[in-house]
Every structure is written in C-alpha cells, then in structure tokens.
Image (cartoon, rainbow, N blue to C red; front, side, top):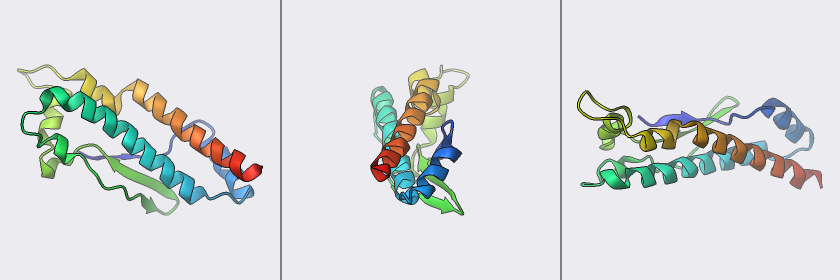
Length: 136
C-alpha cells in the first residue's frame, strides 16, 4: 500500500521558475523535500502503530527506501506500508472492518488534513530557503 508522495503547495510552478532563473539546484531541493516528507509521515505512522505492535511485522513493513523516483520532471517517493512485506494489516487498521472500528490516528498519520498541511508548509519552506540561499 505504499503510496507516492509528491511536491504539492500553492505557487509551486512560480517557485520552480524562480529557482531555475537563479540557477538553484532544483533537483537537490526536490529530493530533500521528498525525503523529509517521507520521514515526517513515517514518524507519525510509527507513533500511531505503537498500540498495534504485537509481532512488529506491520511496522517493519514500512518502506525504508530513500530513493526518489523521477519520471521526466515529476519526482515522487514511496511512503507507507508494503503489503507484500507484512503490511496488509495496515489496511484493516486504517479503514476498519465490519467487526473493528478504524484507527483514525493511523489513518490521519498518512492521509489526515493536519499532516498534509504540515507537509505542504515544510516543502514550501524548503524551496523558499533554497531561493533565499541562492539569491543572496
């Protein structure tokens, strides 16, 4: 169930254009932002999973790869649990079953509005820091 994380914040196209004009390292800051996004989400997932850890199989299925995937000019990174590596219970925990309520904290750790807003702010700050760095 590892999902893809991307760079997403308002004004992103303008920020990229400005970085290119200033000859900033767009690739490096993009990869750094995605890696920090992954760490941010995984920290929250690990915290939310603490009460579910009996065998540690599910939490050990968190994707630990730090490589950023580029498809043309679009970069992404995998975040979340790998189903094939023991992450299947994460689906039932996040969405619930007919006999079990969903774990809102676990769901929110990856899909919640608060986490999405934190990620957008973090990514935006990283790009603006890079602009300030190359502009001075």
